[in-house]
Structure formats: structure tokens, C-alpha cells
Length: 246
Image (cartoon, rainbow, N blue to C red; front, side, top):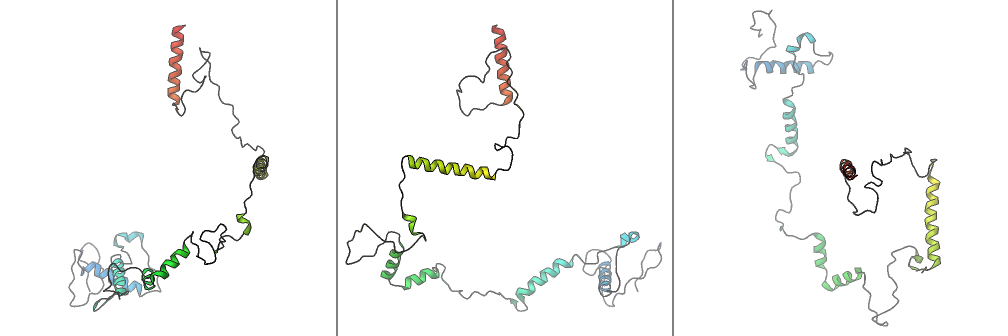
């Protein structure tokens, strides 16, 4: 049995070390005596499910994690390699069968189209075009009334055109607009339909020594917005100039 070399403490029994095993008391070598003893204690704790092991506040300096944190990434790496690696070497799960395939090989749809004769491909392409019309022997080349061979819409009255003009169109637009307003008013559940929440009156512009301020008159520029500080400076300059003239 290995005992502690500290003379100031009572003798403490350590775990057994097998004979013929080289151990080292320092460094982070694989055969470090302290790490080796910790691993032995971990194995004993794992084999003893009848007891519950925890940490003590009096011996925190001697505490160590029950699970070896250094072995977690190593086990994950070994588990990952076990799925795709064998003793003989690498083993690809999805083996490439087309190893001698040409780099510019077209897709399978293009290959299937190339197997058909050209006149069949051209005929199928024309049938899918929007303005294509089959040539019939008993009819002229140009026809005014063409019946659509494909039915795009389920409602047959979709193509019926109704021309509205004059007062009828104005009445219909007004009725449609009024219907939207009525539908909106039905959904309003508040007392004020205009949703005016802020009822405080705005502060009026102070009339100082001038009958008209900078806001009176027609707007000369559109889209030009000054900051509040600049408007105050402009108003002060106008007030000072007015006082000087007077």
C-alpha cells in the first residue's frame, strides 16, 4: 500500500497500485499516480450503486469530478470513428459507383429527350406553347374564333365582358365605396370612430413683437424641414431685427 509522504498529517491509506506499473508523481503524463488513483476511485464509485456520493464542505480541496472530463471528447471521437472506420482502414458508407462518369454528363431528363426523334420533340414543344394552333385541312390558316383546347378556369362566365360607362359606372363605384365604409363601421367597437386619443390642445404660436410670424404666407419650398432649434434661432433674429428697425 502506498502511504502519504507528509509527516505533519496522520498516515492515510491510498489505493493499491498493481505491481510492475510505472507511475509518476508530477506532470500530466498518462501514468500520473494521482490521476491513476482518481480513475480507480471513479471505477469503485460506478460499481457501487447502493450508496450516494457527494462533496463535503470540509474537504473541498481534495474533491475531484466523478466523471473524467478529459475522456468525454476522446469517447465521442472514438464513437464517431467506429461508425465509418474499420480495422483494415476507411470504409465509405455511400460508395461511389459512377467513379468513371464524365464531368459534363447532362441530367437524366436531357438524356431521355435526346433518345426521342427530333420531330417528336418539336411537336411536343409546340403543343406546350401558348399561341400554338393545330393545322387543320378543312379550315383556313387564320381563324377569328378559336376555342381553347385547355380549360384554365372553372367558371365559364369568366370571359364574359360587361361594358359599363357613364352614370352606371359612377353609381357602381359609389356603392362599392359605401359598402367598404359600412363594413368598416360594423367592426368598430369604440365610442369614437376617428380614434382620436390625444385630446390635449396644441400650444399656440406666441405672437411677440410682430403681427405675422415665419409660418404665415404661402409655402415657398416643399420638403424642407428645419429643426426646432433652428426655427427658434430664426425667430429670434427676426425679433431682434424688428426691434432695431422700430
